[in-house]
Every structure is written in structure tokens, then in C-alpha cells.
Image (tube, rainbow, N blue to C red; front, side, top):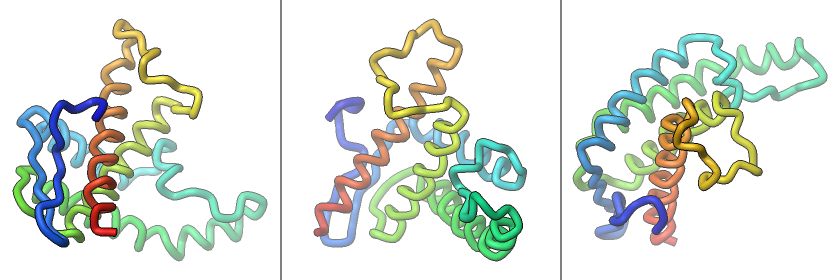
Length: 158
């Protein structure tokens, strides 16, 4: 199971799931969600993975694309963050709520991964605990592991 000794997300019935996070994990998410919400209102370069370039060779066309879709993408991201924040205490949730969690966690992970300059060559076992970025790397891996649990629970419906 990797990072966790117990599952945080379990399928309890068709279309129903139980989320059970320990207090420190709920506190972490409660801290990260407003940080991302605030960051989404800026032009911070760490958001590039959330709003990727559609036309790399045509800046004018790319600007038009972003003008057309950015507000809708922002609205969806804010909605997912709101759902996660509203349900972070856990309990039984439906598939739509769990999918919102997955999207919010993915956004958090992508922004943090961009800031850490994550690559496919990075090995979580190679992180030096004395590295000043070690806590950020731990959060990144936590988010990935929690997201993986959600995917596993959702895939049980297939």
C-alpha cells in the first residue's frame, strides 16, 4: 500500500465511498486548499500546468484560446477545491464528490510538482531529509498517494 498503513478512501457501496483522513492530513489539506485558491487568482508561473499552452507556435492564437477557456477552467477548479474543503472531515460521499477530490488533489500536485521541477527521473527514496525542500517533496508524494487511493476506489466501479 506504500505510504499509508490504512486506506483513506474505500468503496462502501455502488457509487458510495468513505473518506477517513487522520487529523493532521485533514489539517494539511485545509491549509493547501486556500493557498491554491488564492494562487489561482494570479499569473504565477507554477500554474502553467493547469493552463497549458494550446498553440505553442502561435502566441496570438494561444492568447485567444486562453481568453475563451480560462474562466471556465478556473470555475471548475474553484468548484473542486470548494467540494474538497466542504467534505474534508470525511464520511460517506458520492462518486461526483470523490471525482472533485481527485481533480483538486491533481491541481495541488501539479502546482507543487511544477515548483519542485519534478521529472520522471525523480525517485522519492532519493530525497535528502536535510534538503530544505524535503517537506514539500513529502507533501507532493502524499498528494499522489491519496490521489492513487481515490483512483483505486473509483476503479472498483468498473
